Length: 359
Ligand SMILES: *[C@@H]1O[C@H](CO)[C@@H](O)[C@H](O)[C@H]1NC(C)=O
Image (cartoon, rainbow, N blue to C red; front, side):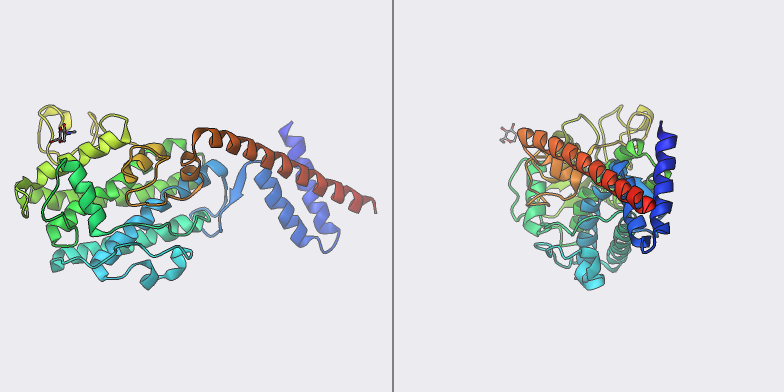
């Protein structure tokens, strides 16, 4: 059934071109045809530069939220400016982040943060070469916001409040909060991707996000027993609290582990030191977009925006998850109607082609 239809459409596309002045229309039709079949073109020139199914587009666009966050946090901390100062076209005109600032870092940590910054810029470019994406969402990376996350993790009020920009150790602790969430998202997205093009991109992103997480964890591990200034809490202990908070917000059991774990929970149950997080086979944990939004919103609920994304994350997945239940129902109906309309437009195109041929 599919082959004759495909043949008919291909033949029709060729005929449109023959009808003269039809070049542009043929291209339109090709796009229409692709869209009708659930495929959607990227901006081209990407890893494969081909058409991606809508589900791959959605899964590739979702992590843009986290890549924007990482880019702004690392760039501002290291350099004192973010995407607007590096390549404003990458922001898509989205609002500047709230509370961004330079961090007081040792030259060693600033050097690493600078490399992370430009790695995230590369990630944004890579994703946007494959999918259209959306503008930078409003981000809150203020000291106060990070302070709130740490206080929630510690279940206490800290005086003075935790400030990620105050020194290298605090900055690394705040960094501990960031790439790991993206990493679990890439692990979760991988089995749901349909094309080698999308899987190749996600594997490349996952590799570097994991490496960033490992660098941050290794630097913190070296200071695992140090106390975080003014709070009398150890570095390793604080990471365990942050991971536990993410487990609670993700609502899917243990997918996050601090630098030290309970006996029996380290690799093969042999160590309590836990420099890299992993399940009982030391495989990276996965998270769904739903779990990730619960974590980054700080609400445990993908429909309740907040945290580092005050008005919410962007893209079709985050928007769909952000709607209350009954609205989601309407959305599915809306998608269905769009599909029907797309089919109608294709039929009209085909009718035009037939008329053109007859004349
Ligand atoms: C947080 O602290 C309060 C008061 O100290 C206590 O009642 C509550 O059980 C704590 N919550 C958790 C999750 O530890």
